[in-house]
Image (cartoon, rainbow, N blue to C red; front, side, top):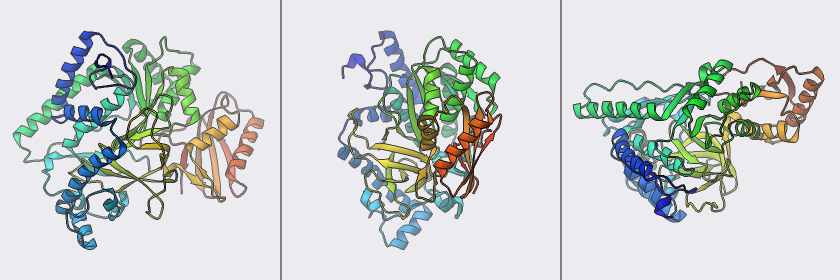
Length: 487
């Protein structure tokens, strides 16, 4: 692409021309950003921009080079993997590529909980390089884990990399509607003075950067008054985009639309994360915010390992093989065929402090069978069903997930103007209820019709009920799952 159409983050799918002063400012900011998040930031960002157009086979070879080094590191320094290698009779350098990787077991949160924390920590990584994080618990199984601080620059670089696909820059402002950020744990005793100084400096610079570019709202206290505050912030701050959990953004959009508090100008984009983008959520977000939806997906253990790349296809994702090796496996652990739904298993290529190797994410997806129209060589996720904990199977063998439930209620049937919020609560395999927040008064006749339609979807063996409430509360994770399993 023409260099005149490049921003600080590199070439774009949607080129934009910027004033010279903005380009100079961005270039300066990029250098400062290298200080903010570590010396690897700039090189990682430029490398992602460079390699994204390489053939898929070349990208796989790059990933396998990192994978080989990670596996040897784990075999030599992580007690759990030393034991696994010994049990399988493998030398530390024997596993080198993705085919070899499949000799190792798939691990889960339960696998990690069954051992002492030190069992998964690399003995050769100093304690001050380990940063403690906690999952949100949206799967019902929150747990603490560690990431390598040297991985954090790559996480930030990947965010800017995905932003660049849609014309966003380092200094573009945005409103963030998320759970409050976790407090950083104190550095352990014995942390070298140079490391303490660097971490403190980085934290201060990052705070200054975020104060300029972000406005944050906690979703835990989200109500009508808070929604109005978000509206006023958007109008005054004039962000390029908003970012938040999919269900939260849909709820804010519905609330403000009902209050007729419409934005004077559409946003350049709406970044939805962490939850399934169902048809009704998409309708609400697009109707209110005006800008295109930019869909991303990930876990706290891996951050955003895949992201939407094509503007018109928010349900298609590219896997960033610079960050992870991904697999789709069947329930028995064998590799799923292309086009077959399976469980997503990931290997983090950069977390040397606590390697996640063949980690079952609890998500369901279908690997793409063709290349993407955008021309990138990254693997394509053609179908991402989301958390397996949000999916149910009927006795007849049909799977119902958030997307299919939304399509049934609002595409196949006409409940768009009836149901404001909803959640299918699975009390037992034979008893389920649809909890709804209606638009205004719901007549008994319409409620009964909704129950009958739900019963038809779930099957004759399931007792289906409909419960009307004023509010569906958030889970402890800060999310509001569409399908909630109590069993």
